[in-house]
Image 1 (spheres, rainbow, N blue to C red):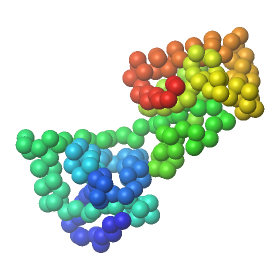
Image 2 (tube, rainbow, N blue to C red; image 1 turned 180 degrees about the horizontal axis):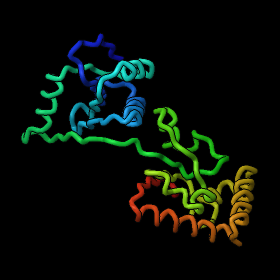
Image 3 (cartoon, rainbow, N blue to C red; image 1 turned 120 degrees about the vertical axis):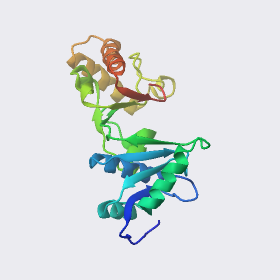
Length: 220
């Protein structure tokens, strides 16, 4: 972790993302997300020191970096201008992308799920990036419009209860999840889980067509 006294001329903080300088990459993403949530713009320096982030310097930002173990460097205006000039040079394969908004994130997952069952949820928890859990009720109630990014993981939208049938169909947890899925489909007015999941998948498709960002992995 890099700790610096604040020079009078300092205006920016650089959070390096190269392996040599940064040991808490996920926490660094969380710091960047937090900064965007403070209505501050961030520059993402593609191909510069592992995709470093350039943030407006504040005392609170430095404290958060130190608490979370995120390495950072305090830059003067002159140093910042020099870095940006290097990135803008036609001879360099680099670019400075301006980030303006902290996206509101939803994770499509049942209430019974636990964070360690989903790699992305684990990352969000560790990085201290906030997210909401939503599931079929919320999707069918058109609540997806409240979010910028939707994450999917294990869900099987065919209504066949996922890829675990062959190995785990006789286990108590699998049987309980099957019962919960059937009860929820009935509550939502569908005769079969497959019908409910088709309606949910259609809503998600409409969300993506309308400009929503979706990240899906595993069996989703």
